[in-house]
Length: 79
Image (cartoon, rainbow, N blue to C red):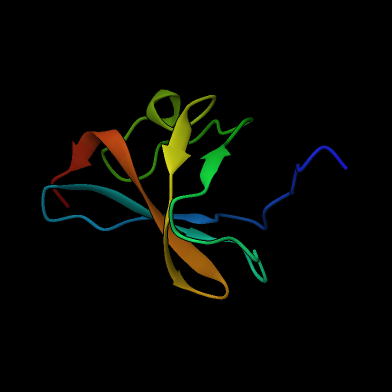
């Protein structure tokens, strides 16, 4: 396979509070912290974080659990 996974609806949740972190829901991802992921096709902003700060960018992930992980973007969400 090419390693591509289609995520469910609204998989991104900003942490807020001035954080640049975004929680990604990816059920059964099977990834480990330190893995690198790239997202494409994102058209909606995530809180104050623009779609362009996430889409077509590569991120090193930090795993939360079997179904979610965080990425750190180049922008922050004051929310």
